[in-house]
Image (cartoon, rainbow, N blue to C red):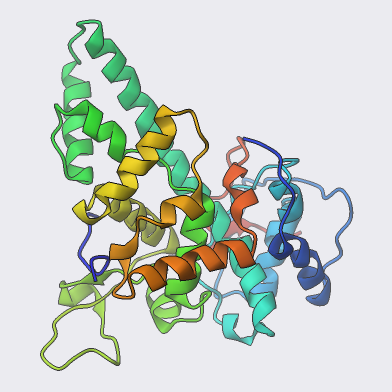
Amino acid sequence: MVRRIRTKPQHARKPGSTVVALCGLLTVLGFALPITLAIYLSTDSRPLGPRRVTDVIERFLDQGYDLGAVATGDVRVPRLFLSRIPKDWRDLVPADKRKQAFVFLILPLVLQANEHVYADRQRLLDLAAQKKKGKKPSAQDQGWLRDLAETYGTKADDLKELARRVDVIPPSLALAQAAIESGWGTSRFTTEGNALFGQWTLDQNNAMVPGDRNQGATYGIRRFPSLAESVASYFRNLNGHKAYAKFREQRAAARAKGKDLDGTKLATYLTSYSERGADYVEAVQKVIATNQLAPLDEARLRSEIGPTLLGVLPKRK
């Protein structure tokens, strides 16, 4: 199973059943859903202890987060990032409600990771354009390229290959894989170690031991300080490991043709992510289709600066 390795640390569309049904979920949870929700940010923040899932969702709603409107391209996603799965996550029943809430809460983390990768990509493409004009990168840029190449497992002077690796991942694909690998957030590896994507590690000091691990095996599921770091590691894995070269090749081909990145199509090239192979790919594609996650590929974060983690939040008034 190639995914189990140590890795280095648009347009309006019709919303799907998952995002539309979220309104029903939030109503059941006791939240009012006015057409317009006030958006506010406070600089008066304080650390918060463990929160209930309903409290967390309410904080998002306080920021005007409407997943249905996000899916249609009418609004952007607030910069609130869940640091860990709430302790009462499994109490959110039935399962459909938990699935809807999972998408609601994990999407901002995926968009944040894409933003970081996109910023690096733009700088990389600018340097590549300058190189074509015969301009040599500055010492600072050369150092940055070396660090970037080390992160993505390639050579600093091969800007074409770097550009192939330093690119975004469709949110629909990331959400579907996170859903499968974490059991929609219910896995103990997720609740105890913030592991959304089931990445393996040989570092015994940073691993959680699976109950079904074969005798004599030394791997464990990698633990992360936060959900955001788990997402970032997943991005580095798909963008850097040799097992996903075909995935990156097809993504680059879509770019060259001016096409939007399609999570369902790109999932086809992730047979190495799981021992299940083609069955795993089919499962990922089914999650995308059943929950109609494709419209969220057009989602973007708001431009304002806000709290970076749910764990440091605006003080309630």
